[in-house]
Image (tube, rainbow, N blue to C red; front, top):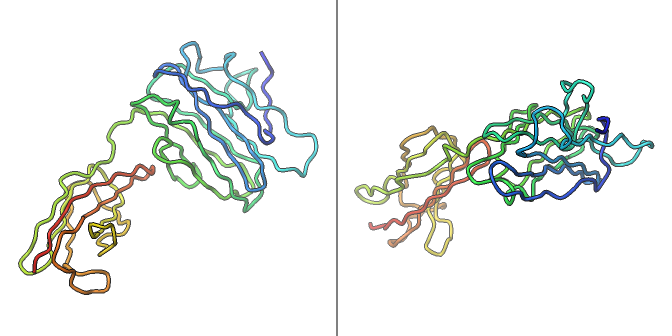
Length: 269
């Protein structure tokens, strides 16, 4: 087998993701890029014949470039625990289980340089019933790769530690029981239930989609029943004309998963 080497991947290194059907055999990629054109990528996934230690399916990162001064990034899975095969790998396949975790190291970017991470083909590769969560171990931010398209960070000039976790796609966020209870006079109470702690935005729109009133703007809410009052007025404080309006509630989780619910309400003075 090849001797593992830590190092950098020049742009545009790497292979395309392969969509392999089934929970027991799939692969996906995470790609890192900078505005200067540097690019690095890693491949992760599961294979029936793979082991959780080094095997022939794991591929070491190539050595660093011989000349400094170019645009380079390093991205790899560090494995100091693999004995004589210890090193940094850009391909790491594991034996199939429903819960897995990969540690990642991102380096090579200059202090203040913006690095964008993306996973353009993951949706075609990841089996239903699973999700992958990217965690920035420096900031604690988490992103669901199935429900978001990218993550942007600013380098401090050092090595940035990240993690990828595969877990069952359970306990999805949900908005249920969206309704409206009119009160005497004008206005009423918008009611809905959240399945878990989420950040919510609630608005009243005309049937043509035009914004009438913002009731909540990305507010953190706990799980359970919620209620917010609409006083029957628009953003300028004027009474909204009699008629039918659309209630819209959008909520998102800490990993970027977003859900939406809509209902209609009739305003009568």
